[in-house]
Each structure stands twice: as C-alpha cells, then as structure tokens.
Image 1 (cartoon, rainbow, N blue to C red):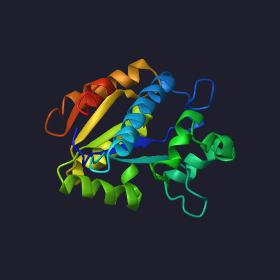
Image 2: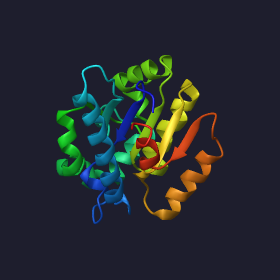
Image 3: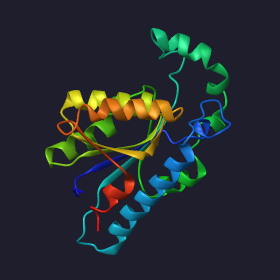
Length: 201
C-alpha cells in the first residue's frame, strides 16, 4: 500500500441492503470488509504522528433534482420516484455511517465519483504522488465500474477490492471482475481486502 493511496467508499447506503429496493446480494460482506479496512487506516493515523495513512473519501448517490436532470436522467427520476422520495434510503448503512465522523463524504448525482470536484481533486493528488485509487462499495457493475472507467481515462491506477465491492448478485460481480482482470496490471490490480491490508503491516 502506498501512503498516497485514495480509498473510495462508494455509495454504501441503506437502499442497497438485502430486502431494500436496490439490494446487493453481498452488501453486508462488503460492509464488513470496508469496516476492517477503515479501522486499519484509523489505527495507522492514530498510531504515530509521523506515519502517513491513505486518504479516505465516502460518497453517496443522490438522484439529480428535477431542475438538474437532463436527458435520460429525467426518465430515471420517473422510474425511481418512490426511492428518490424516501430520504431514509439515501442514508449511509449504520456500520458505515460512523466513519463519516473520521473521513469526508460527498454527494454525487452521477454514477462516477469523479463528477464530484473534491473527489476528482483528491484522485489527481494521489496520481501525482504515485498513489492508487482503491475501489470499494456498490454497485459493482454500476457506480463502481463507471468510476473505474472514467478514472482510467484520466490516467489513474486502481486497486479493486473484490470482496469489499458488491453487485446485484454473484453473476454481476464475477462479470465485473472478468472485465477488470482483462485490464490488469496496467490500469488495475484486483485483490482481496486482506491482500491489500497485508501491505499495511
């Protein structure tokens, strides 16, 4: 792990939990692994004033307002009106919400995180200093993959933590992993959370 890495925790919101409208089959597994990772980062930060830790940013997906919705996003809002009008669904999963006290979080109204200027600036900083962009969160085949492809075009190198990301089901998760493995190692390294965390110690 590079001290200049940027860890992105993408859209870990209640709407993606089992039984919710946009449920991801392995969301709870992703929550567990993300928690272990962020706890390790906090331990590094608190362990020594001279020991640098990766930067961490959390994001939430919030649908564009009617005034801001353009093109197909207008239809998106119609299809997902019930979800959009329930603010509870936008909230962080409780096990992740506690990290909003330790790390910054930003709302976005596109699939890719890099439409948010603060996230883009942090990723540029990581790239300049030789760091990787570490991908965790949901949905593997949507916001996570979209973030990867925009970032790849911007020149970022990624680490995809396959057990800290969740898709709709195992099939979609495996499809994303297959796509990303085709781009190793130039654009991305695919690994488990434990493999990445072993680089911390």
